[in-house]
Length: 102
Image (cartoon, rainbow, N blue to C red; front, side, top):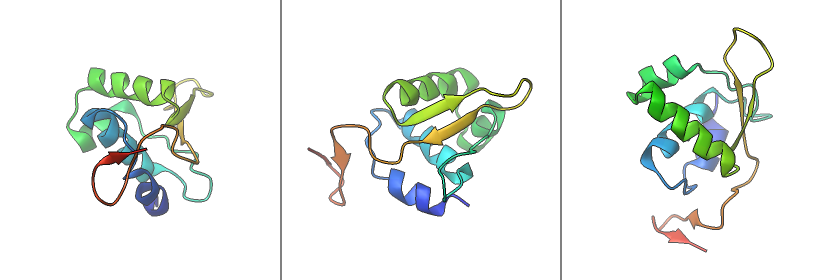
């Protein structure tokens, strides 16, 4: 479902392995047309990534404050909605050569 989104974020430099893995997992759940409506729970992300809940929350927070995702909590009792940025929000982008570049 999130193939195009996953392809676009796979080269983004997030600054940490956990953040990158969480971002890629969110991309799997994202709607390719809008990049919105990615609603995996913390538990689901944990099960898929084998990262503990606390580390996932830290990664989500880092992704949000650095502009990689926007988090919306609009429904009580339902998972939050994570929207992935349309464009790379950082100043460095990992190109096909595998190294960060400006």
